[in-house]
Image (cartoon, rainbow, N blue to C red; front, side, top):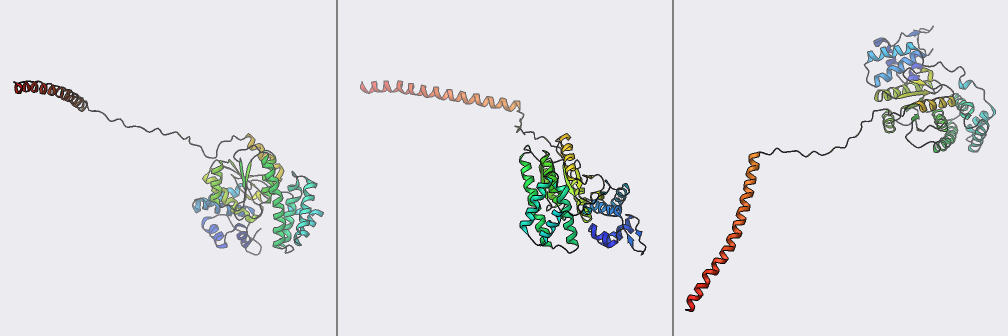
Length: 365
């Protein structure tokens, strides 16, 4: 059970907003802990996230609360993982990786990554070693055992390795528009799982575009429209990532109702329909989506309106028969005048010749 302060921190909402939604719109019945303070469960967090995202896409508060309550009552889309990633024991590579991160030892970090890829292989390294190791890094960072610089250094080196594999795998994929867009919502800071997923999806022969976590919601909508993709893959790696992920998904579906949104990450079980969970094994999830896309017709997410070439139309002006007759008569008159002029010109020359000759004879006589 979470306190109201914890619920506010995890959802990104302030405490007054949570109390207002409870009291004014009946979002859920608040439970009381033994201390008498409000207590919140996972279903309550789902309801808060759903209502916030519905309000963002234009729902009224009362309707949004009723819909959010219905989604929370239906429960999660998938059960939480039986074996949390953080519960896996640290192996020798993980211990060395964490120590090198704390010491900002770039060379050792690179050697550990090389050894992990060689030991587990490109298809299994994310599930079997990398993501559990990142979870241990998160735990050490939260406990103050690892500084921000070491955390970012280790993650950036791992991201570089995953990006290289993703680029190499995409070169073997048939050219064409990406069938899926992959990334995380703005504000979600962990995207290694999605990058590993994108690489495995490409290795399965499916084209995708990895967009990372720096795009605004409107840019996501524009990217889907540009690529005409039918599927988007997001993640909820931490509880506080539920709200931005749900908000982005709601906006995408509101703008593009035919879009299918899949969600991965450790806390994917907090999402509600129509979002779909990927499962907690990256390799299996990539194979499953690749099969879905192979069977899915490549229809665009928005209907394409055919462009019909426009032929200019010359207006036909009706001709008045009387006017046409008048034009014909005028033309005929012009022709007659021309003929008469030519005849008169010839006649005038002959007349002048006939009169001049007798006059010359008269002067001679």
